[in-house]
Amino acid sequence: MQSTTISKKLSENRERLEDVLSNCEDLKVFPWQYGPSLKHTACSVFFETLVQGKKINFMKESMQDLVPHEVGPATTITPKEVIAFFSQHGISAQNAELVDRFDKAVNNILQGHIVIFFDGWDKVLSYAQASQVEMRQVSEPLSESVVKGPREGTVEQLQRNIGLLRARLQNPHFKIEKFIAGGTTKTEIAVGYLEGAVDDATLTELKKRVDAAKEGDILETAYVEELIEDSTYSPFPQHRSTERPDVAVASLLEGKIIVLVQGTGTILICPGLFTEFFQASEDYYHRVIFSSFIRLLRIAAFFMALTLPSVFIALTTFHPELIPTNLLMAILDTREGIPFPAFIEALIMIFFFELLREAGIRLPKPVGSAVSIVGALIIGDAAINANIASPSIVILVALTGIASFAMPQYSIAIGIRLLQFPLMVLAAVLGGFGIMIGFLLIMLHLSHLRSLGQPYFSPLTPFRPKLLLDIFVRAPLKTLWNSPRRRNMRKL
Image (cartoon, rainbow, N blue to C red; front, side, top):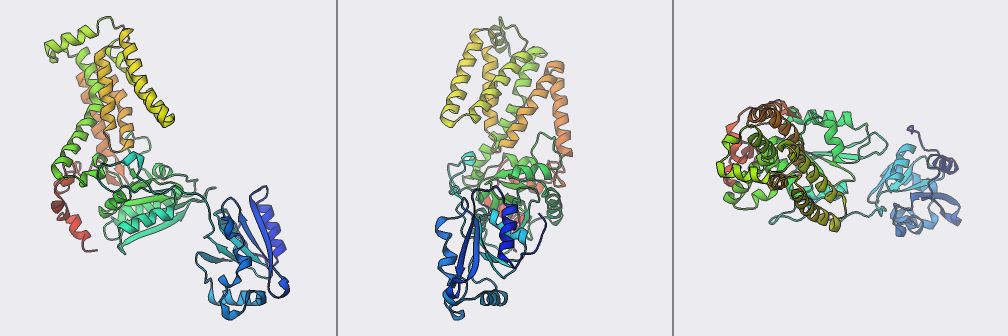
C-alpha cells in the first residue's frame, strides 16, 4: 500500500477504507455527530475482534477526553476548534497519536487501534488503549523449570516482556531498539543490549543482519535466528534462547545482545557460544560445589549421548579384546540369536526411540506421556522377546536418551541426536579409528564455526584462561564479580 495523505472529505476516506479493507466482516465504521445541533460528522473505525466493547463509544460520549474544558463543552465544539487545538497542542490523551498518512492509519487499525476520522480534517486520531486481544499471563516457563529461583516467564506481548526486563535491570544503559519486519505480517522486532558492556562490532553486525532479514515475514524469534546465523546447516545452534527474564538479564550483564519479537515469548540471546549451552540459570541459585558437580554431569551426559551407541558398535564389532571377559561373555549371551549386526540393531532401536519421543511431544500431554513411557516399555520388551534386539542395546539406547535429556538447551540436544548417526556409521566401518576421525571432524567444525563473527568454541579455541572461571565448573560469585568484564560492568 502506497503512503498517501488523508483526504479532508470524510466520504472519500470511508470509500478508500472500504476498498482497502474489503471483505473484512469484523471491520466496523461507527459514524457519529458532535458540536452545535450535532451537525458535524466524524467516524470511528476499528476491528470489533480487536477492540474492547466498552471503548467503542468513548469518543461520542466524552469529547472532553480529547479537548480541555477551556475550549468549551462537547456540544459546542466545532471542527475548526478541534483542528486548531490538536495542531497547536498535539495529543493530550494517553496512548494516542496524530496520524497524517492513510497507510499508517490502516496499519493502526490492523493493530487494534480505534482510528477517528473528522470531516474537514486531513489528519486522524489513533488510540491504542482499546485492544482486547487476550494474552497469556506471566507464569513459569515449562521448558525451563527450576527447583530454586524466580518463577516468572515471558509472554507473547512484546511490551510486557520489555517491562519484565526493565524491572530487573533498572539501568539507563539498557537500550532497546525496535524494527518492523517489512513483509506481510508487519511484526515488531526489538533488539536489547547494555551500552558499555556489549561489543560494538558484534552489535553493528547484528543490526546489519536484522536489517537485511526484516524484509521477510517474521512470526517467531526462530525466524530471526535462522536469518542471522553464520552457518545455517551446522548441527550446532549459534544462538541461545530463553523464556526467563532472569536469564536474559544475566546475559545482558555478560555483554550479550537479546532479540525479542512480538507474538512470541522466546528471547534470542546473541551470540551463543558452545560452552554456554551447558549452563542453566539454576547454577547460580545453588551452592558452588553442587552447581559445579551438576555442570560436570551435563558435560559427561553430552559425551554419553553423542558416543555411547558408536562406542558399543566399535567395541563389539572391532575391539572385543578391550571388553572385560565376563562382560563380553554376558553381551555375547544376550546377542545370541539376534539376526542383525550391532550397527543395524542400534540403528533400529534409536530410530524407534526417536519416533516415540517425537510422538510424545506432538500428542496431548496426558496421552503423550503415556505413549512415550508405555510404548518404550512394550516395544523394548517385545523386541527382546522376538530376538530383534538384545537387552544390552535396549539399555544402551535408554541411557543415550536420558543423557540427551540432561541438556539445558533443547537446541543442543537436537544437534547431538543428529550427530549420533554419522558417528555410528564411522564406528561400523572403521571402529575406534572411525570414532576418532568423527571427533576430529567435529572439533574442526567447532573451531571454524562463528557466531556473529565471534569464535564459537571460545574460550577453548582461541584459548583464554581468564574466561574459564565459569565454564566446566562455577567459580564463587565474588570471584566472578572480580573478573575484568564484571569490573568494567560496575562502572556503568
